[in-house]
Amino acid sequence: MINYFKQLITKDSVESTIKVLKSNYLTQGPEAKKFAKEISEYYKSRFATCFSNTISGLHIGCLVSGIRKNDTIWTSKISFVVLAN
Image (tube, rainbow, N blue to C red; front, side, top):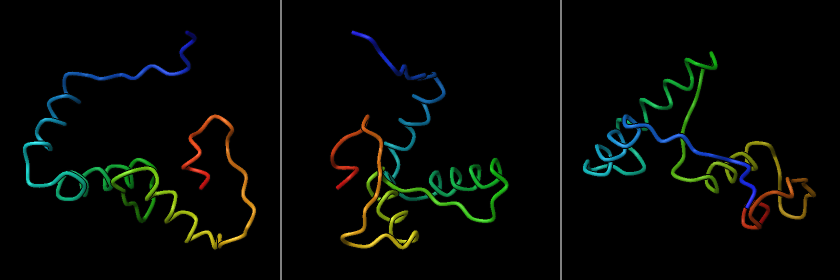
């Protein structure tokens, strides 16, 4: 098999994930706000937000871009069909 991606999972990543899993928040809360703030600072953008999954982010991206039902869009062929749907 030829891999085209290899993840990097550090000890800090595992510990941070466990901390969130043991908290009262999985998809919202203080860590999500902290992450969005760090992204905003890194890219020097005024606003940033995060989503619980890729589909939610793509859905909002399509809405704010003005993409509507029956519009034609192009996507990568190296993807899951659900992303295009």
